[in-house]
Amino acid sequence: MAGVVILHIMTLHNKGGSNPIGVNTARSISYINFHPYYTVKDILGFGVIFIIWFTLVGFYPDLINHADNYIPANPMVTPAHIVPEVYLLFYYMGLRAIKNKTIGVLVLLGIILILFAVPYLHKGIIATAKFRPIYRALLFILIVNYIFGTYLGATEVEEPFTTMSQISVSYHYLFFMLMPIYSFIETLLKIVLKKDKTLNLN
Image (cartoon, rainbow, N blue to C red; front, side, top):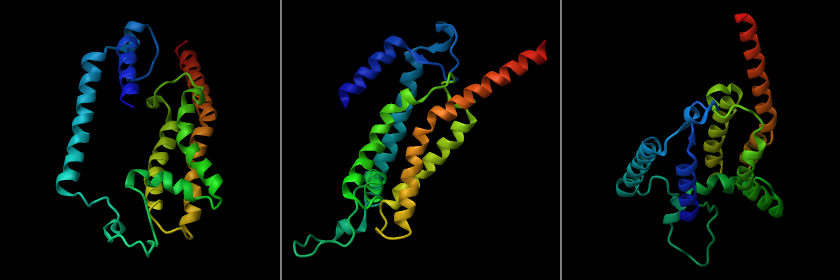
């Protein structure tokens, strides 16, 4: 993980990053320097994360832990409801959304592996969400879906939670699988609107 992070920073330092609005023009205009923009941005991000982390660890260590983790171990009794840590609950929800264990494992792997396909699924010419209203709306729903799925991962394996888990997993997959369609539609709308503006100017 650390090696991949170092390679990413080296590539970003050598090649530069795209500008915040994602409009590709001349390199001198469309790319921004690694320092001070990315260094300040990363320092701010690390600072916020460390403040949250130290606050949770130092003052509220039990805030996001499950109550069953405090039951003394008993080799003769299996807990009725076992859940993983909070950051794994969404993936756990995907695993148990399907009754078939083999398919459930495949769904779990797919939730993670589909993220690697994003660079190939995006078919538009607009590289930023600033000018992509459809993507922004669907991305907002995806974030809400992730939070809701995290909650579902800690619930009992019964109705209506099982059905809601299947809906949550389905939306996660559809968001990425439909990305070529809505990115193409947004590109088409951008071209049409640009032509309309050109005609109006003439």
